[in-house]
Image (cartoon, rainbow, N blue to C red; front, side, top):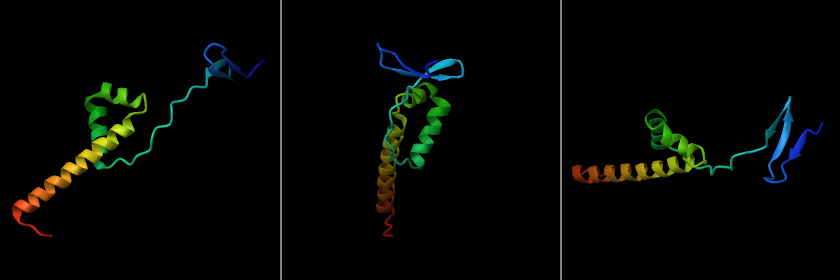
Length: 93
């Protein structure tokens, strides 16, 4: 019995596992970008409160990029707010 076959129409390969042929499909590699505290909090918020959006971002491998963008925006906003507050209070350190 053939352990591996390839469908001529689709070009998808199949491997024999026990008594079943399973497709050799894989998701594309997602770009690795660091996610800080704000991105992690946003991930938890999406997972708990907006599951459909969370899974819609997760399925096509867009979640990591989205969380990295959110983290960068939040970090910039946080830095801007701290600077404005320090200027308003007259803090020089």
